[in-house]
Image 1 (cartoon, rainbow, N blue to C red):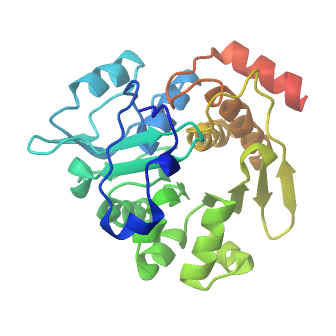
Image 2 (image 1 turned 180 degrees about the vertical axis):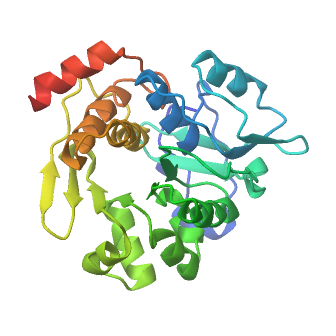
Length: 294
């Protein structure tokens, strides 16, 4: 929702203890999102068909049709008919200040997916979602020896310290932005070296338009951000990065090359408003990747 003014013009500091304001917006747009959906959508553009594990509500039909249109199965999504699908309601003013309301809805309920006992060549990512799912699936993935990336993201403030440490321990890769990494350092009292001791392969930190860094015990490798034709909205770029990274790992690229693929994928996401509005063919992807990274 776009508000044609500034919030500060309608909020009186001396009345902040008794706030009662109404913002009349110019228009409203509804877009599909969520970390699982965003990552899966980008992977579909890269020719993959990942399985989404999540819970959704009684209003999910439109989103379900969108996923299926993009070749993405919905068999891992548990429908809670008494709930609405988790949603964010964002109002943005002319100074790009935002007021966001978020409802968990169906995300309050675990998705309860039953993994097959044997899965060949699988790869997973645990991103923000139902907290019970995040812990349960990390345990199952470790039992089944399935490598996974741990991406706590916006769920960090509500993950208890002991759960955060358990999910992180044994992950193949831990990925976050620089602010989230500081939150993890503070919450767990673990520095970067200690985190690297607990993961199997690497720690990846993203820095927005300043690129990312792949850290192992041997070295820190800076990965520049790939150039976009235009920058409209950075929302969803992190999820696109994770999709490109997953595609690189799944196709047995080296970790540096996989991170570069992540940067290329992210460059498409910022070119449109919304997290699943961009499109590219695999040929276009590799051409941009080659032009930027050689």
